[in-house]
Length: 232
Image (cartoon, rainbow, N blue to C red; front, side, top):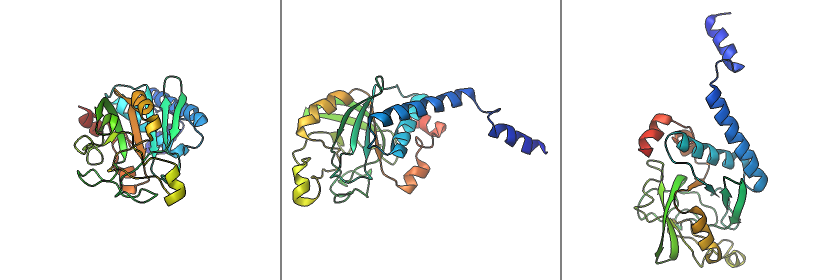
């Protein structure tokens, strides 16, 4: 056996694997398993990517969070596709409807943007920031962490806010809830709870199976050198 083949064989059984990396991967899997049990409607692949992206950010200098919000834009707006998890207790806090941008699609969102004025939603990993009172009432600002994907969220005024058009009654009339200008708007009845749960430095992960993003995201692929630059 050549030296190279011997090394590959040893690596494949874990003799040269990093204990720290193995331990971190184990913690990710444990958290995904626990959260999946709380929210079986979430696609395991989506939850896996959300937790992995969050862990990548934390491992590269972003402060850890107490909560994680996940939005699955591969689902229609007529389904509950927003989940908020308590990461300390490993509990599901909310499962509900959330709007996408009017130029992202009809019932299904399939177009996403980082451009001001596009009225499209953005995908990727976000950090929630300060709450405030604005034209939509009690709302929550957030910053996109992914360069070229969602990092203009604040410039675009992409915030979490209440909207009357996020109403399940709309589904019976037109097959979907209403749409926003790109914000992940929620039902007025839950808006205060959502903002209070997510304000002051929590994580939000919005998913869509976009091949280019899946292949290039610094957080999904945990490209530490890129993540470090983005978080400085």
